[in-house]
Amino acid sequence: MTVTPDRLDLPARRRRHARLIAALTTLIGACADAAGAVYEPIAAAPPGEEAVDVSLLPCLQVSLSAGLLLDRARAEDDARWSAAVAWERKEARRTYAARCAVAKAKEVAEQAGPPGERGMPLPTVYQFAAMDLTSAGEEVASLFRTKKVITWAAGPH
Image (cartoon, rainbow, N blue to C red):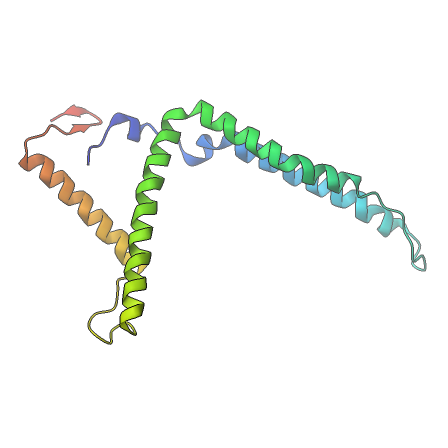
């Protein structure tokens, strides 16, 4: 495992997803306005009135535009932080592979019988995560043993 300046320079999560967060807040406001368009006439109607005319058009407009608004915001964030996106995708693939391995191990264990019946139960998800960190330490030690240079934020040591 190498620690590179690229990984250390990743933006804070809120900054990385700023346009998406802004789009979500806009969408929340649009949902509130749409709900107001429906419930304000109901609230203003006399107590005995059974049929109140309301417009569902604002609700329809929000539902039709929400996906496009969020997709566009996500694309803008991704374009702005392309290095972070590449790193996130790489990490997601690694994490996905680890989750698949855990799922397969659980499936095999379930076929063998109840946990603990024939030995130790499988580690929990949190224990597997800690084990993944341990393997990262092994990777660093391996790099030292093979005399490969590790680049830290301050430069080579």
